[in-house]
Length: 148
Ligand code: HEC
Image (cartoon, rainbow, N blue to C red; front, side, top):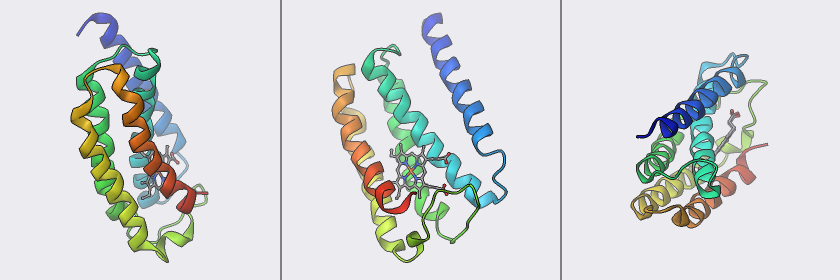
C-alpha cells in the first residue's frame, strides 16, 4: 500500500472511530449502544464505498470487498443485537420492530445475502454503483419501516 493510500485509510478509519465514540457517548443502555455501533459500522462502510465510487478515495478492490464484508457481518449480527426490546432516549428504533420481529429479521437476512452475493463482483470503481444500489435498497427498506 502506498503511503498516501495508507494515510487516507487511517484518516478515514480514525474519523469514523472518533465519530462513532462521540455519537454514542451518552447512550446509557449498553444493548442500544452495541446495536447503534454495529449500524455505525455499516454506515462507515457505505461511506467508504461511496468515497471510492466518487473518486474521493483511491479505489482498492480488497478494501472495498472488506467494507462489503463488514456490512455482511453486521447484518448477520443484527437479529441478535435487536432481539430484546431495549430502549434509550437516544435510540432511533421504532417499537414496531418487536411487533414485527420476524419481518425485521428477514430484512437483515436479505441484506446479509445481498452483501454476500455482490462482494466478489468488485474489481473496479465502476462496479461500486451497482453494489451500493444492491445494498442500499436493503438499508432503506428496513430504515423506512423501523427507524425514526
Ligand atoms: C433489519 C433492519 C436494518 C437494516 C437492514 C439496516 N438498518 Fe441501519 N438501523 C436500523 C435501526 C432499527 C436503527 C436505529 C437503531 C437505534 O437507534 O436504536 C438503525 C440505525 C442506523 C444508523 C444510525 C446509527 C447511530 O449511530 O445511531 C446508521 C448509520 C445505519 N443504521 C446504517 C445502515 C446501513 C448503511 C445499512 C445498510 C448497509 C443499514 N443501516 C441496514 C435498522 C436496520
